[in-house]
Length: 234
Image (cartoon, rainbow, N blue to C red; front, top):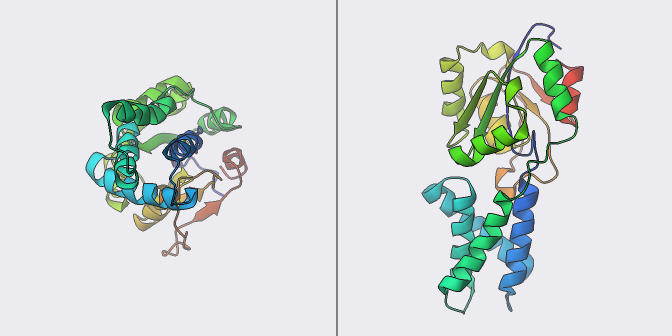
């Protein structure tokens, strides 16, 4: 693998720190609260997934959108009218996520320090609500390792092409590192960059996609078991 300094665009949620596990707990609590008499828990979850897709289009990513999704799901499935008290309770499931500490994934600080010492160019690239994401970056204690922090509304090929243009990145030595096929790996490859896929067993279901082989001959895709394995390749 390359010995020369590389540019690593690094995802945050579920790559550097735990994130979706808290949403899964909130969803499980909401489904128990709803206690639907006809739908199974799995069927309720499918409705939540569909509603979340709609809410993302209207509200973007983040806790506000998630809270809207839970309220909309309640209104869609419950025979009980939505009262202000019920709405506050449902919002509470989302707000518990904001109270969670930033739980760094094992090996991340040491690996970032290693990459920094080897003079790799590190840029944190995360999507979602600007205040929420920058707050997590600040609380994580990892900001010092990054030359820049980018919070984008969506991760798609135009976003990666724009990042490459603004930072004057050479695609041959630029890699997107992350756990999401939909947001990190596939759009980065489509934009002509290399990618490092670090799967996470709690990756959000709406981020699941098949990961194809790179289309271009000079593109590279790595699949690693852990973030710390970057030390074996860079």
